[in-house]
Image (cartoon, each protein chain N blue to C red):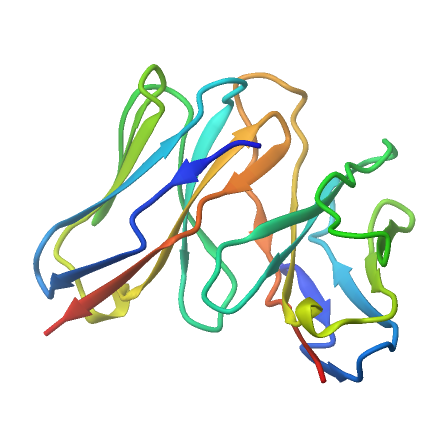
Length: 108
Length: 118
């Protein structure tokens, strides 16, 4: 199967910047998604990268390097409500493979 | 517009009983996915439907699990002879389908069904 790796947990301070990394196998790669999931809720879409480079959406940005099988999600000006799990998901055709998720805790 | 809906939101059952979980995708979405998520774990792919094509069942953990999609819309996930290890949140997601190429549409998730097997 396809392995997707993310750090299990991260902690950051309110107002700071945090980068969550994701690595994946490149064979058959189609695109990469980031989702946010608050405890007890369903995942919600954050970003989608298919080409190399940085996609910026307000406080959130996502970067992709196809050749390196690497992506990161950058969260700026952290707020307490950003405490959640962040899921990296790779599409291989119409199949989606999710990483284990990174649990981010934002401290005051 | 209406999002993906799932029912029931919670289901408690006894070991050995059968359960049915329902998913109503977003209108017009031709692709439908089922996942399960155990407490504190990532999403585990179960099954994928696309239009009238044969479903991708490669993620189903055993032959106790089956799913149908009627009329290209509503889907039902059935678990027969439930076991305690089946306890999890079962998530359904739908998306538009774009023929294989550079772009893939994002998935929209339902709220999930929390299944507890006693």
